[in-house]
Image (cartoon, rainbow, N blue to C red; front, side, top):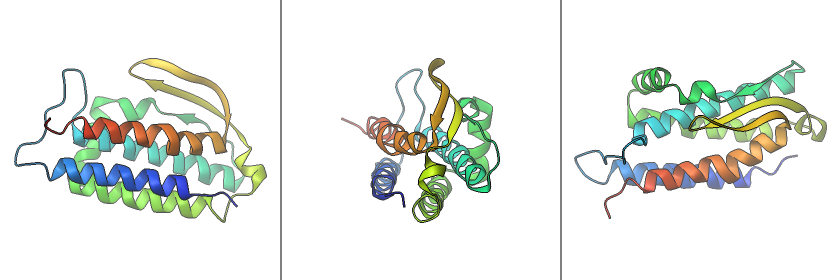
Length: 162
């Protein structure tokens, strides 16, 4: 059984930050040049979540899988996800549900062998390759809880007025 407490805490912090930013005033906070606004950050997280859920489900079903986060950085795809989710509130609901689903799948369902399954991974950030090698599925989950979600939580909070 995989402890999903770090995932729960990371999702809670991200969603709290997203709500704080959304409630910060009538005008959406404007990001610094070259940075994403809150909706694009949330759309990116929703796409990363979807890719992670897909990888977990593939491993659990015995299928071969890969993990590639490039689509989660594509401007057209981000805008489409924002529109399909119905904006900020819909994105937050989607992320909340995805977090619950991921925790349900990972906690009691995955065996240690499944968590150790090597998943070919390509992870980019701002066009820079961070990872281009197989990673154990557990490392993808740990990275989501310890790096990806907290990083985007900080990114959201940086949008608040000083």
